[in-house]
Amino acid sequence: MKTHIEEVRWSLVHPIVQELLLKYYREYLFSTPDEAEKEVQQILDLLSLRPPGRVLDIGCGLGYHAASFARRDFEVLAFDPGERYVEIARQQAAWFGPKIDIRQMECSSLAEDAHFDLAWAGAYCPGQLSPSELVADFVRIHNALIPGQWFVATVAGKARARFSPRVRHWEEKEDCFVLEEEWTDASNCYGDSWFVFPDDSRVIKVTEIDRIYDVAEVEPLLRQAGFVDIQCYADLGAKQRANPGEHFAFRCRRPGA
Image (cartoon, rainbow, N blue to C red; front, side):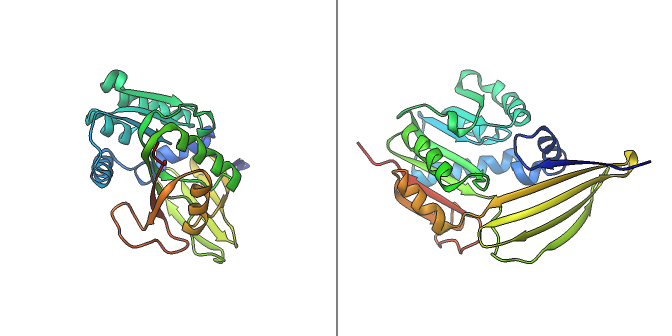
């Protein structure tokens, strides 16, 4: 039987990519409810923020953080472009009624003005955006905040040491084999992943190109969008700055009125 190879360009909203991520990488990529609880409390302690208030959850994934904020009596607008992720997030939100508004949309559709006490983006992955697109999203987030309030994010995506050679590795899943190849140049990270399903002679190849955004690249874009008091660290609770190529966290503020 001839093997059928289905080629897919990486996108968080592509139905096949969503299914692969939820089936094989769910806990790794979307955290867990317990981890979200700890992270939300860390954010609130960091900013000395207490309810009542409104939270904007950007790229909410499966809704764990939104539920955690609502559990603490915050009102939450949470959005994600992925249809399957939003379905699951709405199941989380159903327990909290009108406290959580879950929307399927991208940041480009955000139109709220001076409405939120906190904007939060967990495991934010800007690699599919150009610098100008990223600034445009930052401007929308900036404008959605009440003057003087904070935007907090952890940045994930393809943070890598630059100019890395091609690296290959494979892994056996419950019903398939996964072969991955990754490499970087001065500004991008590239990846090809083959999901091989031997039982039905099917192969899915996912091709990905992500721009690498380091601390030094993100800070001026936040400043260009109007944010002040920009602070970037290795993680939310750290006091040391992140090194180039590493994942990092940042917090910044819309200027006060």
